[in-house]
Structure formats: structure tokens, C-alpha cells
Image 1 (spheres, rainbow, N blue to C red):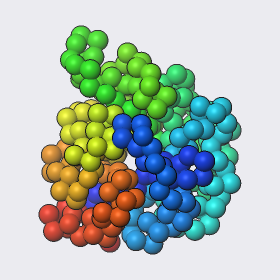
Image 2: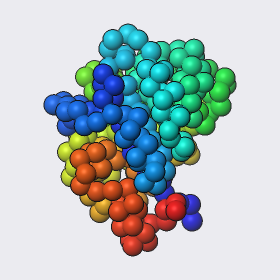
Image 3: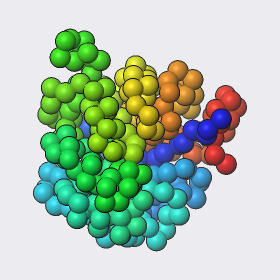
Length: 257
């Protein structure tokens, strides 16, 4: 049986890791390089760093930060935010990232997925997708709509249909963030996670809502997700990476040593 991955997400603003609820009320929690190194040492499988203000400030992702992370982190990590074109992707990979995540850019310019996959390989290109429940309709058959610009702009695109299109374009992985559960810590949004995971053949990372190890166990027992992304539950010291993995093992979830 394939092992399930545990991934820690670090949202970065002004060179500080920050965390909010449903993209609002953010508080700073620490230095991204130091925190990334700690989680790496603790045994997390991968890391994701999002430069959450880069796009709004019309600048590229913080390349110097990526270089510093690469010097201290010896596991795969992805970066997102401020990825505006192939040059930005290339520079992030040269700085040491294994993967780049595209979200708003991919929705507005889907061709970037195919171009990135052709230039660097599908395994290097991750689709970040923010989805919100809006009700089932003929236009939104899954009931979940794609949002961009940090959850502020509805796009009138069905989340499952967008996932399938992104796969056709060459995306290597999908990180699905449920806006309704983001930062709430009451559990993942299992419905849309399972719908997307079953609709595509690329790995799907579930994001938004983890508060306890039981939520991660539920995710893997009830959906076809390949990985669980966590943030608040480790950032604020409630749980450790190893503690979470121990609970996963006890529940019979295959995890990496």
C-alpha cells in the first residue's frame, strides 16, 4: 500500500509565517526558514511555502528566502505566490524548490500549466485550488466554485471540472484548499476532497481544516486523498509532526518513516 504524506504549509508575509481563519485575521507565528528546518528535522514528508502577498504586491516570490530554505531543508518543498510566468518558475526551481504552485495564474492563464510541464516536467508543477461551497446547480454540478486572489474573487468555474482540465493540461499534483474549513480546525472538507481525488489520476493534497490527528485519519479513511496538509495544529504547538504520524500509524494509516 502506498504511504500517505504529511505536509506542513507555511504562509509567509513580510518574511514571517502567518496564519488566519478563512484567509482573514492573520497572526505572525515565526521565521519561515527556522520553522521549515524544524519541521524537516521532525520528520515531515514535505513542506509548502506560500508568499501570500507577492501577487498583490506585483512582485515575484521571495527568491532569497527560497535559497535560505534550501540550505537548511533536506526534504522536498514547494513554493507559491508571485509565480507570474515561466521565468519565475525557473528562478524558484534554480533557487532550490522542488515544485512550484500556481493558483490564480493558472485559472486566468491555463496555458501556464502546459508550458511549465513541458519546460520542467509535470512533477514540478502543482495546482493550488481554493474552492468554496455555493450549492449544486447546472453551472456548478459539484456545488463547489473556484476562487482566486486569496479567496476573494469567485470565478464561476466548477472545482471538479477545473481539476480535470488542469490534469489534461499537464499538472502533476493538486493541492485542494477548502475555503469553508480553512483554519477552522474542525476537520477537512471531505466531500469536495473525495470528488476531486476520484475525478483525476494525479495526487491530491487535502488542505484546510486539520485540527487533530483524528481529522487526518478520517481524511484517509473516507477519501482518496494522497496527502494531508496541516498548519495551525503544528504552528501553535498543539501537536508535533512525529506525534501526528504516531497516531496515523496506530490507526493503520501507512506513513513514511
